[in-house]
Image (tube, rainbow over all chains, first blue to last red; front, side, top):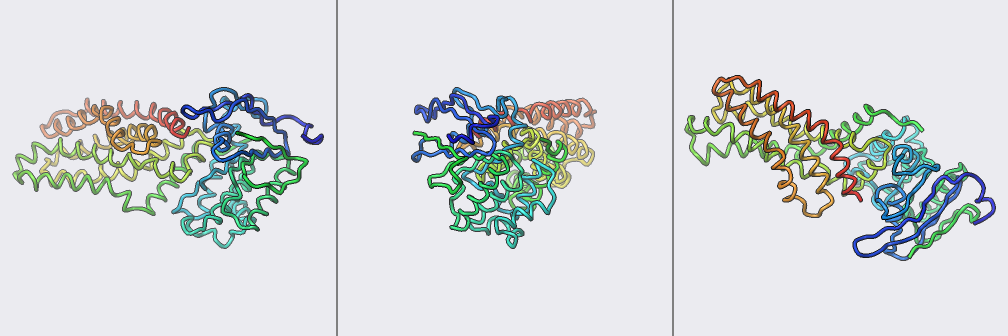
Length: 213
Length: 227
């Protein structure tokens, strides 16, 4: 941990997390602290429970033991507050195939915040999809769908980004875009939880690694 | 941090689901087709004698409506689970029970309400006396939302299973039996010219009970299915 990263209040904290799936233990005694402007890179071999850990941190899966804290409060007791400040990009793109990219974003972001059409256009423009925003999601390529999800994170205004393999399906320019988005988000004092096999391109001063398995 | 209110979230979810349903109108019309087909097959398979058809009309209409809603319940949440949008609903700051109630409402508008509107035509084909039609429609109007709500709770519980279809019917049927019994009774009593208000009040009470309990049940079951 670098000196700069140890300042400030802990926003996200996992304490002594343990998760079992059936008869096998995925991970045990996982603890970490994350402050504003920091990125946590979770690494480990396939099947070691990286995605499961992210789901536990989001509140989708209940851990066997341990708790997740956001701003010092238990997430399980303050679900709406935590979820309002978090944006989760999972394996699946969470897009309705019959709705256009724009309609998908209007709905998903509309549940979280009052956004104007201009905000959503700006986010789609940033990920390079302004020309494809009125195309049904089923006709978008896998990489373009991923870009729509990235636009969701951008426009959500969430403090904490939870990214599960964000580089999947993206071309070189797309991977650079993810790095750039994360760097800018960290500069705005945002937090990033990242699961990725490859190395990311964010400066070392604000990042930490958590190895599973 | 502030987020849009409950009314806005309900409306967003409802309009999104209706829009999706209208883009797949053939799929949404399946339960209605089923209802019409089953009820018109009875005169063909039995005999077109008016006395016989009139005698079986209440049972045929209500059993078909029940089976049509069972058929519809299966598809209620499956798509959302498969494409991952359900995770996003569970991770939004809005109460999951409210969003699932909105989904169920849209589902009822697409699969339950058409049954109510189709009832006079189906009733006519089965020689249901004209004076029994309003009572049947009112009873269906009270009963079909109960069928949708009960179906939604059970669908949320079984959506995580790979082959939950058979189990789903087994779970729903016992719960909605009272609705079938009171509903068919309402049609029967109206055909004999009796006062049906008692049965209607009972159906309305069951609807209120379902409306108050089902959303919490759906949300709890869905969180288990997502785990």
